[in-house]
Image (cartoon, rainbow, N blue to C red):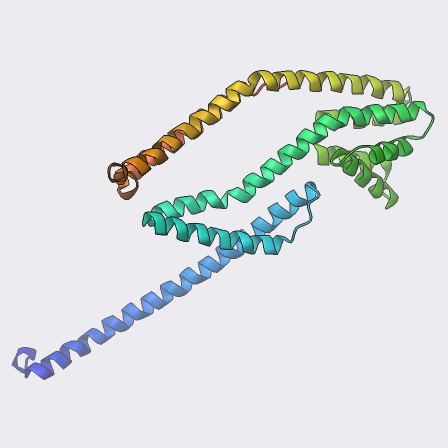
Length: 298
């Protein structure tokens, strides 16, 4: 008997039975996909946490900041979730929330870059004084390790801590030359490289190390003063770059408040998304070009 010759109830039951294998296959496919997606998310989350922990731990150690990296990661994750929820509630567009989420995820890396830049700036400003203090102590008749210890006790944070760390390495059995090499690698300044080179040459071939360090300290001070003048002269160009970046964003925010209906397609349509992406890319490119122009290496 053909299905159309069966009663209506039996025909419906027969059709339902024919759909059972398809439903089971669909259920298995969805379940398998969900398991694979969850496993991939777990792997990505573990890799993200490991990379976040390694980068933050290294950056905080370099800046001599004691923080619990695991607690910082959990706080960062909750902040990202809160930011995404707020943006989604305000705009109702998931893609805007994802974009803001990606930008917010870059904040810890930017904070580390700011800390490293501040630390490098302090080291560059304090290093000529450190070299002059070591030279003055050598002229007073003390040994080089004692001169470094005296400079470490008199200098403020950044340079003082780095010199003290080098002395602690020496107390633990590391040679003075190796401790100075580690100091040079941690600081990463040209002045530190010149200092370690002068110390190494004086130890190998002799010479008046105090006079050499005095000349080096004077040269580093002159260079630091010249860099300060260059920074003052190029400050206007850097400020113009940031004004160029912030001005379109401020105008867009004002227009969203004044004419929300006219500006809504900018965030609710894919054409508006392309326009926003193009504007952000152009602003980033312009800021990069301006920073390269006003960046003068002495």
